Image 1 (cartoon, chains in turn red, purple):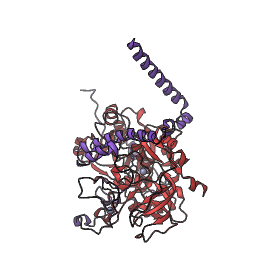
Image 2 (spheres, each protein chain N blue to C red):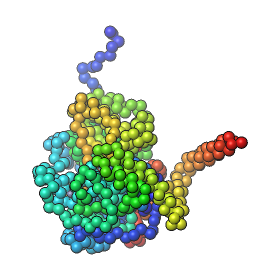
Image 3 (cartoon, chains in turn blue, green):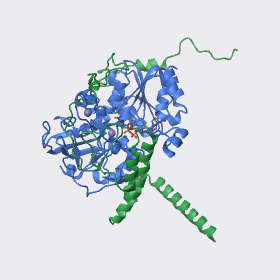
Length: 383
Length: 176
Ligand SMILES: NC(=O)c1ccc[n+]([C@@H]2O[C@H](COP(=O)([O-])OP(=O)(O)OC[C@H]3O[C@@H](n4cnc5c(N)ncnc54)[C@H](O)[C@@H]3O)[C@@H](O)[C@H]2O)c1
Ligand SMILES: [Zn+2]
Ligand SMILES: [Zn+2]
């Protein structure tokens, strides 16, 4: 794929095949890749330093075609799932398992780690919505897909499953807790599903797209409400939680939240703040005193309007991060293999890579009941 | 003061009622419950590594063959970096300027967003130079809109056409 500017993606057959640039690199031939809600922020032109000509995509599986001289564990022919974080494994942050915050993979910014296909704000790497990708630090994160693990489950383990799981984990959910998840996109759906693994007593999901609310109700065994139908979601949630507020609120929406005209005008139309904080605002106001707000929705630099007064006065603990995929993989592979999680159940569309422009549009405009679109490169489709 | 609403001693707890229902039908319920996962649960596996500062074992340096801009909040580039789309043209000049400012400044980020917009125009010019006419209908995935939201598509196309016609009519009538 070839990014040409906001809302413009070209399926381009004449892209150069990436080369080994570093002894720890591998070149991977992509077998499956996904479009993520994070890609929509790029697609909508919301992320600074998104350059024309770039290839997006940070959720992919592939077969190792070539390895650099320093790669020891991975072998040519291995079929791997590639976590979206590019991590060196030896910097202070990687050593503490903060693989989403590596200090040696992104020269352009210290505030973010290196990710595949996520603009120059995340290191300027071409990504996985392509036929071939250069994968740095090949021995650190890429993981051979275990026998018996479905490739569609594997590709979802590169981001969505760990992100949803970490959202719940950062919530510090205790047995019996009431958990509210804002956003019924792939990440929110997975967060709702994972909240139960920590023993939640009640899981409530808020969104405004009916087909997604219907889906999450069944898929994640939870309650789901449309915020367009409930006037004031904060008041609604207070009533729902015996007037105290939820124990844990999860923001799985990020910087393009709908629901507040003031936020939409200042954040999306005028760019006076880095997108909208409507969901985060609701999360902070509907959590109980001393509650925990866990943020996995992505916000851009430099700043946003956040009700700091409520955070302080209510004694809220705010937790947030990019998912540390490698840290969570062993446990999550186990959950999937044991049938406790069913990631591929959220894939709604299987689309040839050549039709990527249409795939972006369907996912972005929420057409055809789209939850998560999977892209299949031509060579992988033949295999 | 009789019609002031006082709160009952006990509120019929719908929240707890739902929370206490059986979870037997949910695979894996409570399997990872951890009473110690309090707000400070070690998501970060504390090893003290951050106190070693920058004196850690570093991977070899990726050779620099293209222009790489780096944040002024670090002394140099990282050991690896992406090689996609080095800065070029006018947008590249703006990007170089923006990278002189720290990540805490509006100049940095707004400069980059501005460069992105300029870059999109450069992309179109570049296409024409190479003899490619950008196919906006295709790039914007409008065939999917036609397929899944035909009415909406026609409505916005007609509105667009009417507005354009009205604007043209207005401008030409003023000239007379
Ligand atoms: N932290 C991480 O590691 C990480 C990883 C992946 C994705 N993300 C981020 O998570 C977010 C969600 O990703 P996704 O793939 O599910 O995207 P998505 O766009 O498919 O889903 C977002 C959902 O939020 C809903 N929404 C909009 N405004 C809302 C509001 N005010 N309240 C409640 N719901 C609202 C939308 O209708 C949509 O269904 C994005 O910001 C994405 O960038 C973070
Ligand atoms: Zn993603
Ligand atoms: Zn690192």
